[in-house]
Structure formats: C-alpha cells, structure tokens
Image (cartoon, rainbow, N blue to C red; front, side, top):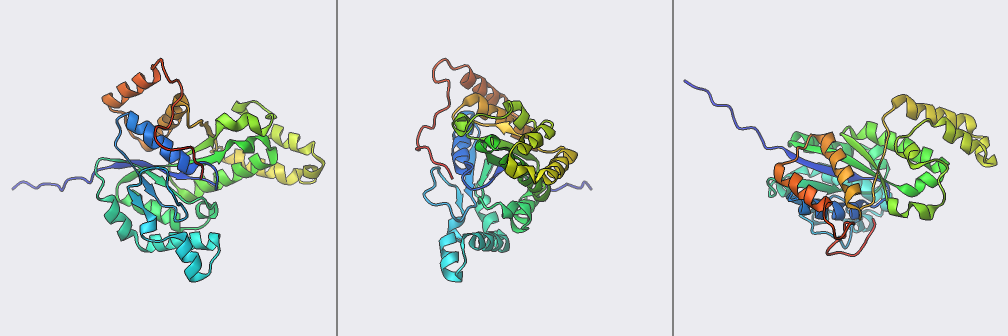
Amino acid sequence: MTSSNPPKAALHFGQVVIGPPGSGKTTYCRGMQEFLSHLGRKVVVVNLDPANEGLPYPCAVDISELVTLDDVMDGLKLGPNGGLIYSMEYLEANLDWLESKLKHHHDCYFLFDCPGQVELYTHHNSVKNIFAQLSKWNFRLTAVHLVDSHYCADPAKFISILCTSLSTMLHVELPHVNVLSKMDLIEQYGKLAFNLDFYTEVLDLTYLVEHLSSDPFFKKFHHLNVKLAEVIQDYSLVSFVPLNVQDKESMTQVLRTVDKANGYCFGDLEERNLQAMMSAAVGADFQFSTYPYHTV
C-alpha cells in the first residue's frame, strides 16, 4: 500500500505597506501595481485602511465592505484614532471574511494598503495578529515601511522616525524594508546636514547628536538624545532604501530589496521584461498611465 501526502498549499507573496499618515502608502501601492504589471507579474491590491476613500487604483479586496471609519466614529462616538483601532480589532474578529475574499485570487502577488496610525504598528496587537494569520495562510510577506524623506532635513525628527521604525520592526515581526519616500521632493525641504548615505545607511549617529547640540533648545536634551542614538545603534537593524515612485531605477531597487526579504524569485519572463523596461530609450522615468498623483 502506498501512502499519498496531501498537496502543499500554494505560497502567496506580497507586501504589507505601512507607515505614518501622508508618507505615500496609497501612491506607492498604485505605482508598484503598475510597475509589477509592466513586468508581467499578476498583482492585486487589498485595501485594509477603513479611512481610504476614492481609491486611485483598482481594488480587489476592500475593507469598506466590512467596516468603514465613518460608520465606526458615528456609531460608537469615537475619534479617528479610536475608530481605526476598533476597525482593526473588528477585522481581526472577522478574519473569515478576509480569507474568503483572498481565496478568489490565485497565483497573484498581493499589495496590502494598510492604515496610517503609528500606534497600530508599535504596540497595538490587532494588525500584528492579522499579519500572523496571513502567514499561517501561506502568505510570505514583507513589511514595507514608508517614511517621508522630509524627516532627513530635521535631525530631531530623523531620530524620532528612527525610533519609530525600530519599534515597528520589533513589533510587527515580518521581514522588513524601510523606505524613504518622496525622494524627488527632498531638495524642497532644505539642505541636509550630511550626505544622503548617512541617512539611508544610518551611519554614526554621534554626528547627528552633536549637530542637535548646536541648537540651544535641544542642547538640554543632549543626554536623552545620546541614549536614544545608542539604542538605535545597539540594535543595528534600521536602514532605508530611497524611493522616487516615478523613477524606474528607484522602483527596481525597492522591489529587489523586498523580493530578497520575502524570498520571491524572479521568473525568466519577468527578468526579460525588467531589462527591456530599463533599457528603453524613450521615457526614462516611470509614469502612471491612468490616475492622477495622490498621496495618502
């Protein structure tokens, strides 16, 4: 008698796109969806943000069919932050709804557009538990954490976002890629104190702390800033990939970093499409074909 093993469930690869409000998560999902489609990758976008209205991309699964922020705020008399937390707890309690929706999409690459409330990724457990359940359903996900590049222009804010990024990495417990978004606008925010590599590689932060100490306001917090910098460097986990969502080379760099993090392997066709796109003589910059520029 021969025994037959049950077939293994198919793997699903994708990204959970997280980050503070206004960091460009929805714009990233739209741009990455079009970029992946040009490469021949079958991709669907899942909107998990109950506050998202007027989505600028075709949406395969939309949490608004289950719960919306406006309904929660009106019905339970909650503010935006409390409403988002309740919505994520409600989704966690109704994961069978999410599973039934995702089952309709086979052999797809998934982009999960997530809410922009920082607390959901630093110490609240609902989103973490949702990601953990997706992993149990054989989703191999990378957390793409978007941070607006304008924080580089302010040393104090940059240290703050480093702490937030580190806390998010430790709490979410997924392969993680931190991205500095809107790099095409960084010159508008003022001159950087150091070159860009200092910020993307998170080099010796003692220079940044010393730069802060030149400001009379921050000088009195010097000891606190030193300790924060030590925590960040002791973990040695945080680094950033710069992103201009309109630039093909920048999108390629981010995509390859994400694919390396979650183990996705290029197929021959996709690699050929990528080479053809990068060698195109006309249209050096990647342009959205359908939707106007929109940032969430």
